[in-house]
Amino acid sequence: MLVDPGDHFKGAYEVERKFHVEELESIRANLHTLGAIAFTIGNSESDLFFDLPDGLLAANDQTQVLRHMRPSGRVLWISKGPGPDKCVAMDLTDHDKAAAMLQSLGFVETGRIDKQRDIYFIDTLHATLDTVAGLGTFVELAVMTDDRDELPALRRDVDAMAARLRLADEAEERRSYRWMLNEGSPSGP
Image (cartoon, rainbow, N blue to C red):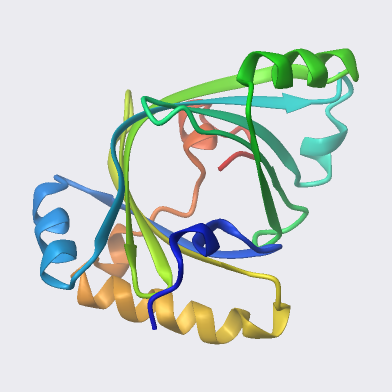
């Protein structure tokens, strides 16, 4: 079943697997062979991470991210945690105003990640092909839902798609980009 592209990023929970890969072109070719639909290609994304000055969110396994996507112009506010599956995202219209608003509420910027990202839709999943400076290239497979009871079945769907794309289990990267870049900082998408 193909879901409307707008539905791919809706939900309160996210099942996600990330794989470190040597190159992206063979994955891109496999996605095309499987009938994936390109959503955004050639986007440059900047993620600004926010926390309270005392680090309360990080201590509670939570992350606040303000994402600016160019050239698409999309702006997302992403709240992850607590825990690995909880994720809520909201579209915004003005990145600079959103950052100013978070700062006016007492949040402080705690990090930044810049990446190149292509997003494809395949069945009910979205696949992202990422190039992160200083880290390399990655493939993320994810799906979102509002129904916590669907998580086991969605994990199986993500696992099956990883197998179809020939993504090896030993290439899975469980650490966040932020963790890897900061050599152990505990949170971030």
